[in-house]
Picture 1 (tube, rainbow, N blue to C red):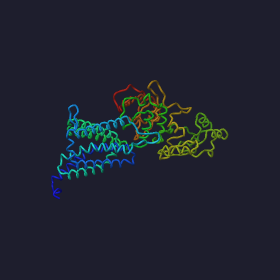
Picture 2: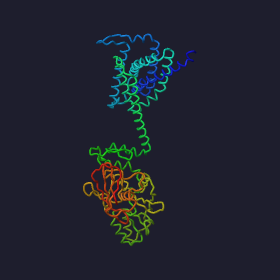
Picture 3: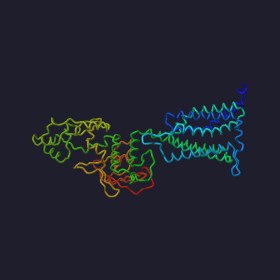
Amino acid sequence: MELLLDPSMWVGLLTLVVLEVVLGIDNLIFIAILAEKLPPAQRDRARLIGLGLALVMRLALLSALSWMFTLVQPLITIAGMSFSGRDLILILGGFFLVFKGTTEMHDRVEAKTHTGTASVVHAGFWVIVTQIVILDAVFSLDAVITAVGMVDDLRVMMAAVIIAIGIMVIASKPLTRFVNARPTVIILCLGFLLMIGFALVAEGFGVKVPKGYLYAAIGFSVVIESLNQLARSNMRNRDARRPMRERTAEGILRMLGKPAFSEHEAVDNSPLFPEDAPFGIEERNMVSGVLHLAERSVHSIMTPRTDISWLNLENDSQTLITEISQSPHGFFPVCQGTLDNIVGIGRAKDMVSDLLQYKSINIKNLRPPILVHETVRIMDLMQTLKSAKGQMVLVVDEFGAVDGIVTAIDLFEAIAGDFPDEDENPDIISNGEDRWIVDGATDLHHLEQILEIEGLQHESDEYTTLAGYLLGQLGRLPDVGDQYTLTLSYATLQFKVLEIQARRIAKVLIERLPDTDNSGFSSGDM
């Protein structure tokens, strides 16, 4: 009872518990690394056995204080140097730590895996336990010597050791989970063990390494690694806010040979697609088209209203026959007066037959139009096209006005690139090295693929075409000859307006200029 009322006893106990926990952390970390080699079902058992053996060894050593004091007496002399039992234990234990730390670090740096032909091969349970026993012997001696030097009462020493081991048992599983989930922390811990092993060997040979130096080095490394883990955590949290579809698509494109390039990641000055990429540009573009298809709006794939070929029932039969014969399309919207007043969808050969025989289109033979709203999801639109049996789908806005037309070929072009009809020219025409003449209605995603760039369009942008992009940068309709310069980290592009039709940018010349050191957007006068 007098012992419990002694304030100095409580101060000594608290101080010794803290020191025992600190001295046991390296033991605990190495036990966690060794336990990882076991099957998951045996890891907790190995940790508890290891810490239990550490408790037994430390209590046994404390009980044999008289024997411990004999460990400092010289046992052997080699080349004029005397070694006590304590020195031999420190030397052997230090070499063991250096050996195990080196082999473990080599395996992890070389990314060696313990896999067999059928399943993962784990280390034997008792092999790991034996290594833990050897480790406990080394660290127990250090902890007991510390206890003997700090406190005079054996009961206080034993209580401190029991409390410290109890704390380590509670902390062992969270610490193991934390260490195993972070490979860089494991490498850092193995570095600590190498340093401690070296210090034990040096101390065994009579060279005392101040513990303050070791603790300072470990503390500094822990602070740096903490900052590293904080930075990684912030990056993961930032990436977690990005859509899973976007991250998945980006990962697949990387495997196809496309380097990281997005507003979330830095890029170097290398080309967007290296020449030694494992897949060709066409293959990457097709995969990219599939992965980004669901993210695109219907406006980016439809034929716009201004380019729709439609038939007006108010025209005479010869005019209608001429319009049908001069168009390569198999289906036409048939309207009364205006495109928005749709009567139905007619097959070209059926309407020509009616016009030749009856001088008019038989409205009863027309198919009812299939309408979708302009906000329809691409995947839902695909299902609509599947049930359309080859018929076109009309896209309308909230007021019922026709915005455009979508066919199955439009979806295919969104994946595989442009397939112009007989009466159409390609949207993008090469005009020499690093020069292209581009239609203003060209989809930005398709343009990025052909020019092998990224950064023209972001999720928040409302435009989907090159004309919309240029209008968005200036906020006005440019004149013919106006230019705009876009500087990316790996390329500089110059856009020059070649043709304006009915207040619409019709043709644009795009030229890739020599590389510059600037990055981001910069505009010229348009």
